[in-house]
Image 1 (cartoon, helix red, strand yellow):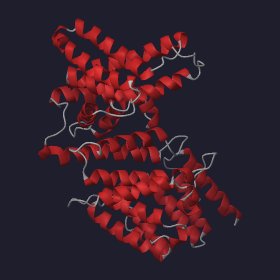
Image 2 (image 1 turned 90 degrees about the horizontal axis):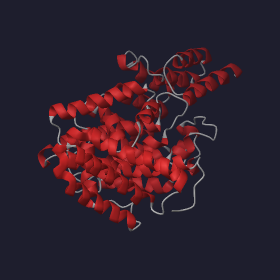
Image 3 (image 1 turned 45 degrees about the vertical axis):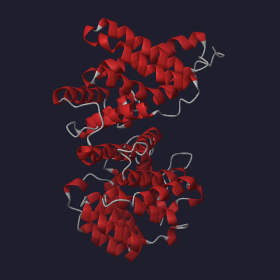
Image 4 (image 1 turned 90 degrees about the vertical axis):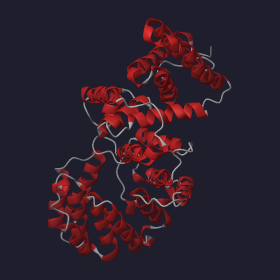
Length: 427
């Protein structure tokens, strides 16, 4: 055993290890037990975490914590199998499956993923993201079973009540049993459509992490990191290494590269025009361009391709004033044709305003302002406030900022709007 770690650091260490190993262990157990026993798989892994917290506090951190967790999970699984008569024949399979993981951990290569582990993890992702499961259930189940997030963490991340998230998980697991959803990669014929459902979940995870819709923090880094990790996993397997996965990962990388400049140390929001671009993460931007180039293979053209291309235009401009707004509007025109979302149309209107002026932007917004989906979307009045402010109409701008403050948004966004109002009163 290693030297004891201070007690306040122990939960952080266990959480880090558990986050990186839980998904692999649960996926392996679900493959062996079958999807009907997903709760049993989660119980085994949860027990390993609790045992680590209890024993490491007194005995110290093992020399190889990862191998320790795997060994404990395997022993607990074997104990449970002996009590479950219907699963007793799975004992040898569990021993073989965990022996490979334990061997890998003992070689100090735990960050690497074997092909068997990758198959298990992707099988788990496709099961959790099955289209038969409602969208919110897919997101929660993916975070719980693949990401190792606790129910309380998921509830905090999405500002939902813990019993609500727990119920979503219960319903998702019930649907897996009732619909006979299998733990396996889809057939080649089904892959593209099923992959769309997976990418939608990862896109939702990333967006919620990148711009939280409410709460104290604008960014939830754990969700951003998990979305990046899972999208990268898809590109490690030949069956899922498809151009649209490259496109989504490219978009995520471009957006993540801006995170260091989006807020200051106090968590205050900076608009794209205000950001210090020297703080953008250049290696991530270069990686984004690489995946964007790889996304061009094949004939399928998705909205992820277009969104990544728009993000690439922003990344290419060393100063805000050098942004190619004409090209961005052209890309938004294609995107709106592909997905006529009012939110995308609002983003297009902002680009129109930057290209042709505030009045042109206001006219573009007026065309979509009555859409039901935008009636409680704070960015609609906030954008109008910015455009009227640019035109010198302070009273009208203030009215729109006030409207925006009455809509749901995060605390950093609320403080930003309040600052805008204060600036108007000083003019």
